[in-house]
Length: 450
Image 1 (tube, rainbow, N blue to C red):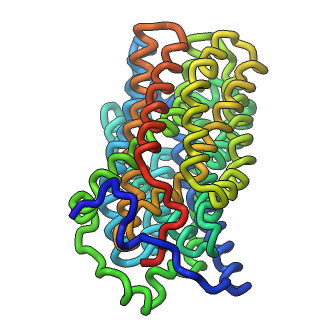
Image 2 (cartoon, rainbow, N blue to C red; image 1 turned 30 degrees about the vertical axis):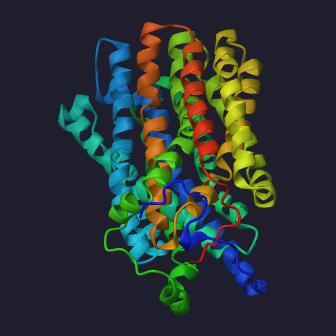
């Protein structure tokens, strides 16, 4: 029987008294959380490098056109292609994670991302290889998307399932810092490269450097992830005996048993995905090309805003452990609904301080939405379907709200020149998230082991 929106799920109902964790258990939980953060940061670094490169150079290099808008659309279409393949990653890595273990899925996803990202850095351009160049680029982007489909759910679950009692949101939020940290890391590589090589040098080949540097990061990430223990859900024979048998096809079981929760979970995360990708990816291209804002101004504003979001992520998650997930996320969603229009309207000022201030407020409100989302989505589903359920909700929200956001925004701005249209579009998606959160139950006290 589906229990999509019920207040109580048999596998997750009611807290049980738990023994206080030992110092060794706390230490292992911290190591797991850091390992999850390292891997997620690397994966989002790879994704952010592509997004920034797509905004700056990949359109002309792989999709030459006499029309700048058409070239940008083609580059952002390859950006969206990786989101289209993310559901395949959910199916593949969700099955591995729910049947064989979280760690095995995470190591494989990180390796796949590293191979695909370094491959982009080695690709010939259209001028050298003709149509083969964009075909190879799209293929590698699809592989990146498959990897990302399995990364987020595994990283947050490995941290959450090791977390001490009463700190699940805090530990699950640590890998959730990865997207913003990955963007900052990509900016820390791209900005000096742009400065040293110049715009022409960057366009003529220096753009490959951030992609190739991913090799070093992936090696570090693989080493870190292979040194931590598997989730207690899989490492404890007693717990595996107590819980329901693993489904042979977790996605099918998820769709049969929890369709309503899956849909509402997607809606709950969709607005935040739009805020993140329109701010971090699209506006970096839109500001300079359409409004004449210096490239460094846009990168700096987005970087400072991302840093502010990182700074409050853990305190917000700790608050969600104390008062619940929904009050914090509802506050963030409502704030984003109100702030979306003023945030993108700031671009019309072309003033670096105004834009930076607006982006900083917007990305801090985003942190209110996204800090507790990892624990919240994981707690919506039973342990035997948790990897697939949490991953599917978050990744589909990312695909619908984030992956297509640059494409939709490019189309909107080709018809309406004002950046206000970005605010109305984003605010509408955040309103949808607000309504979905209102329809979902609080999950803080749900039993997590069974």
